[in-house]
Length: 108
Picture 1 (spheres, rainbow, N blue to C red):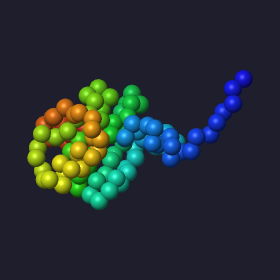
Picture 2 (cartoon, rainbow, N blue to C red; picture 1 turned 120 degrees about the vertical axis):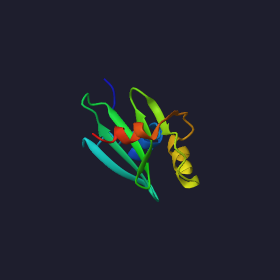
Picture 3 (cartoon, one colour; picture 1 turned 30 degrees about the vertical axis):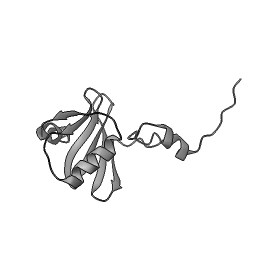
Picture 4 (cartoon, rainbow, N blue to C red; picture 1 turned 135 degrees about the horizontal axis):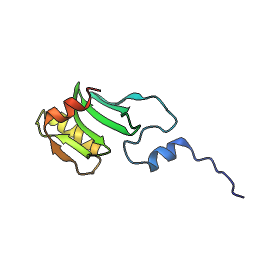
């Protein structure tokens, strides 16, 4: 017989990987502002796996996909966008892909 201990959500969020969606939200698509001109889109694929896409300004520039892992655009946009990507990746390495891959990923 175990005892269930409530863990504050702020601690749970700290322990999860950097871009883990809030498990309490069940929406099929979430749009989350991350900072000035930075937004993360999280959506479910047909198989219920989650995909996350980082937008810098209005452009998809990096993503996490269950089959691909972390990916980022090969296109050089600006110093600010590069900063957004590096911050979002949080030290994880990312495969460099053509911008078209990210553009097509959001055409769900």
